[in-house]
Length: 210
Image 1 (tube, rainbow, N blue to C red):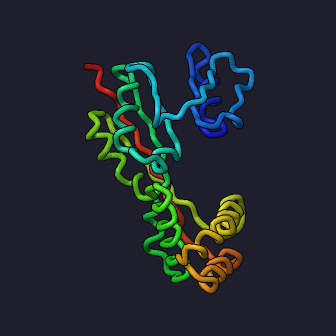
Image 2 (cartoon, rainbow, N blue to C red):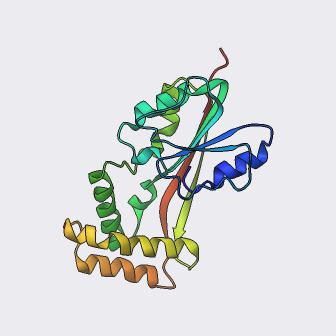
């Protein structure tokens, strides 16, 4: 559930229902005076919920970082009541493949290698519709949005901070050198720079009532 923004929204939308917000770290989760919001400290890779527990299971930016993500997707489907919905949102880096900036291409390639070395798959989200179908869900839908880097704003500040945080790891593992990093960082600071970033793939499906 992360910081709980979606959990609180769901609880407010369904005051007569029950929302369970689960995370391995619940420090940032606040029930915000919502009596129908239950916060649970839990690692879904190690434990889960009883079958047919929920009308809706939602996850955002989670599965791509888990080891046995495909198997967990199947378990998440089992937590749905018949007719219930599974909705997943994941980042996928496929838009950066066509960047016209060589330094950015090298940076993103290095970032992908770093992610994979830590067990994440930054290209898993693109497969969601297929995986939901294979899991037996029906009425599958999909939407995609792409962030734009450049022009200022929160997105630019986020990626500038991210570049700075991963720099020592990229250099230590020799995934990029100082020159490539400096060129990519300079692009972010260029007021005329614009480029596509990661896509956010959202997919959903319904467990058949039968």
